[in-house]
Image (cartoon, helix red, strand yellow):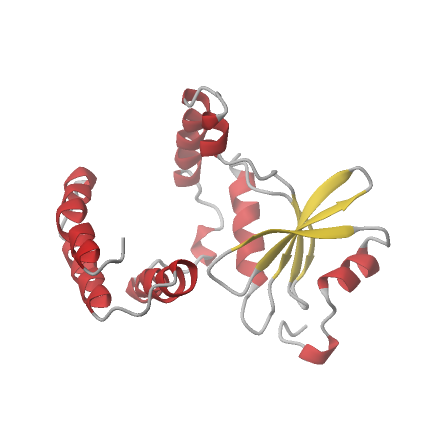
Length: 205
C-alpha cells in the first residue's frame, strides 16, 4: 500500500473522523510545530483524543508510530496510538492534556515529582534495546536540519526577525566547537559567553 496516495482523495480531518468514528465530534486546534504536522483535540462522547494531521507528501507517520510504541514498551509515558492511517497521514492518539511541567509548577505543584518522573523516563529510554536498530542514526545531516529550524522557522516565522547572515555562521561555529566539548557545563558556559552575546549584538534576542 502506497503511503503517497492521490492528494485529491485525501479527506479532511473532519471527514476522516466521521468515517472512522462517527458523527457528532468537534475539533479544536491543540498545537503545531516546526513541520507540516497539525494537532487537533477531538471532543465527543465525554472524552478527548488528539488527532495528528500529517500530509503524507511531506511527513511520514510511520516513524512517529514506531517510536511511540517503542517508548511505551519500556514504560515511558508516550501517547497510545488509537488509530493509525498511514496512507492518508492521520493518527489518533491518547490525549495527555495541555498542562506543561512549568504550568504545573507555577500553580503550586512540587517540582521534585515531575522532574523525578522526567529523569526516570530518560533512564528508561536509554535501556531501550529492542527495535532501535530500525531507527535512523542522528547524524550530521539531521543535526544541520534541526539547527536550521532556529533561523528558518523560529526567528523568521515565529519571532518575525528577518534572515541574519551572521547567525548561520555563528551557529556553525557553535556546532563545531560543541563537538570538542564533553562537559555539558563547560558547553553551556561557552554558549552563554559566545553565542548569545553574538545574537544580542544583532538584535535577535
